[in-house]
Image 1 (cartoon, rainbow, N blue to C red):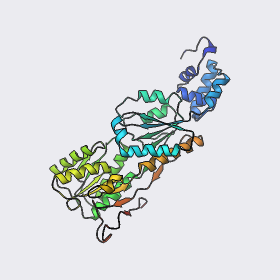
Image 2: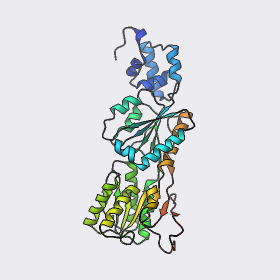
Image 3: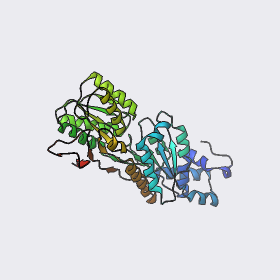
Length: 361
């Protein structure tokens, strides 16, 4: 960048461009108003000196103020972001974490097939102090965008790529899927299919690997696998396709919504659950206890994950650190009618859901 001829007209944007950082990063480095890496701070200070940048007192005082805002980035289509129960609970959880603070929650919906330009521009303005990313896909640009903005960020669910400005809250999804699949195996099921979420989401890959690992440990071949969006209609179609192509006696679904669609297809085929096909879902959503039959599922509270993500980000901002260690929450098997326990474990279902399985073992 050429040096401005009139050094008195040098702006913060000029300094940021010269240093090769965002305007928000330049502001944090110059005014000590938030986190900036040592390398970024050195580059900004050197550029400011070389260009002769002398900010006035009002600008300095303004820069030191917190934006008092947190961005909640949902990398899904508008329709899914506003209708998915897990996402809705995640939003509520983050909101609960911020309730007694001065931070305002700003909702940003950025579909994974979007080029991310609009999100990048917004997060680079310095109008938020941090971000939480919910429902991350490998193609949604969110990791590179928050890296570029030098913005402290917490992901709900393990991101595809880790960096020194990113933390995350998640389950041990692989181990949870192993618990679910081992339960089906303990019921004597030998041909266990899997209806999975999109293959560009890290938690989905972890759950799929857990399903495979449990089957391999038992000496069983994997049943059919279908990767689809988190859609009940899509799951109904996927299960109908599975039943048309092969015989299965067990099914692991990556969400209760997918399990709901699969149950419809199983019943439409004239089969019974669990007699013909035992089914285990994921999330322990309100639907799971009310379905017919009631659904055996793995616990995964979007409300808890969202709240923990919000609290983790508040801790990072309060301590003026860049990131924190990942927070991994436990998941438990909730046993109901769609995959009831062996009689040796539980004589009847009258006592309600049974918690079993220790994700730490």
